[in-house]
Image (cartoon, rainbow, N blue to C red; front, top):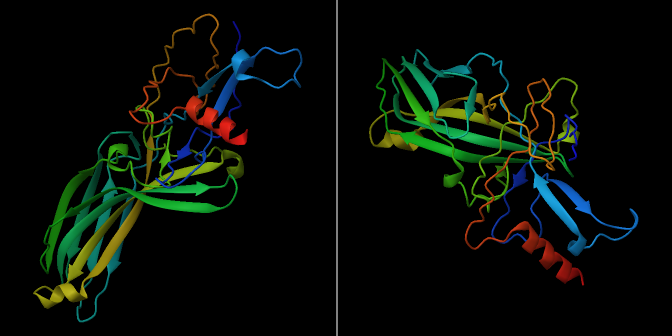
Length: 294
């Protein structure tokens, strides 16, 4: 048996989903463990006498959470003596993948305007610092509610939105925890920055935000032509739950990593590597690349 310990500050395993016309390997962070037989370290490693294992570095949700996000804004309109006040809040700071996000919307409309529609969206923001300072913003979930809030009235209601990979499979540049061709893949988890950590070392930084927008108009047929938006934004953390601490020992001959006593755990899990129909696996891609080089 053998063992190895991965450095704590290494980046998490994240892949940017390529578009249908993109060629070459997808941009992302992978970890590969390779074993081979050779006379010396300088000898070329051949596929026939080597084995490799792709592993993921997964960052789990911290045990301690902060206050639930909340945002508010006040908008003053022309020809209206009093303002419109919008307040939005979440019920907690951290959500797990596949868990509904509950958004409470409070509106105090003291204007002569009419709120025609409420829009709620979840955006994924990806900062790529591997090779440049590229930034991608992708809407991974959106809801439009035809709620009318009349002039000089109040409104309060809680809605739920659930960002899922299944509704975003065709979006180029979407950050994933693995690769789209694997059935166990989900949207990339939020990157948790530890004190003193260098952002450039992490390679790809992922964050999420919830946006609430009101479509406000004067009412009537012509009022829709002069409609304006009033909105707020709130940060939200999307991650995996921390597994049970009672972890069974690894089998003999396996590669394992001790769990550090911090909010960031590194484990090697047995992921379901069932390949989607019509997709190529890593070995197929590597063989094609070798053929092109030759």
